[in-house]
Image (tube, rainbow, N blue to C red; front, side, top):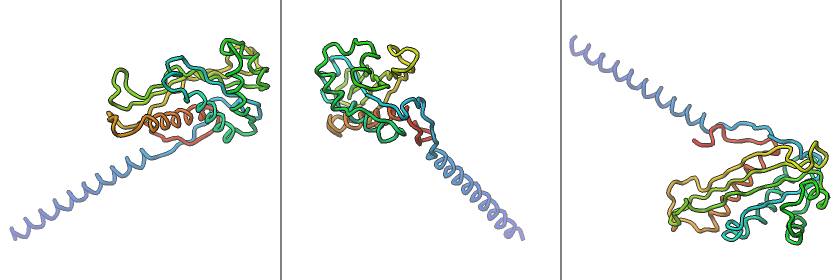
Length: 217
């Protein structure tokens, strides 16, 4: 009888432990499901709908020297993303914008309303790219891309066509791998990934979209 009681007791403990393990596994699964959830995020600025729009990008000489293709790539890809996702918008051909900025001396200091008039648009997306780097400061042996910009929206028919109706700070990083060594990727790969991440986040300002509920997890 004693032996039987001990066996039954051990069996009960085993069942309890098994139950705890089951509940623990279920908790982990639930946490993973929660981390992978998506949420709908509304546009922060919906003033581009049914409007004519031009995208311009300015940056400093250091960025232009180290990454000469960044400005045209941003103009082209952000223009394309807005055109593809904003209802009724008509985005000025980025080739026209780039040609105009190339041949118009001092355009960066023009009143915003005048830029709109010269480009023939009602809205101007002004991207002031103040950071674009592929490495941590002072360490060229690792890849740690970062981009940051202030984006201003100009409304030609707004209260003040020579000021920003709204401004937003947008930043992006790439890759999401800590301490990635220089031998693991090329500069072109890192630059392309960083541009794609930045353009996505900048574009999201202007249309409803789906994001990760926990983007940093």
